Image (cartoon, rainbow, N blue to C red):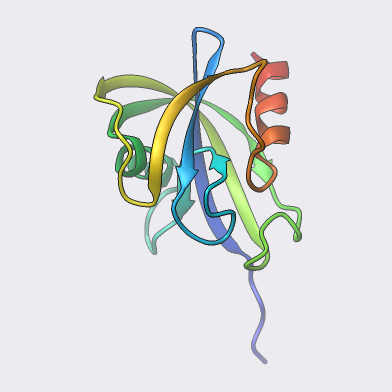
Length: 132
């Protein structure tokens, strides 16, 4: 019997001076919408490494993990299918901000003036702020 399994992703949440780093998505789903940088975990890759890799690929920033924000597993959170995301609070430790890879733009947004966000990223940011 073949079992269905959710896909696994990891995202990075970077807060700086009451702002959050977001990327503008280049691809479906939510093309053109803002989101936390992140992506799919590769085979034999730790979620921590995925978050750091994806943030670097999409923003040019080198980061390190400060804390776990949470795990988000609502089967309806991604229109591509059931996706479980592990979200890490990251700290910048190098690099230069520039959009790349799956991001057409990358910039910091004031936490009180966020654009409409993809997926459940608005909830994720609110959860992280409650923990900080």
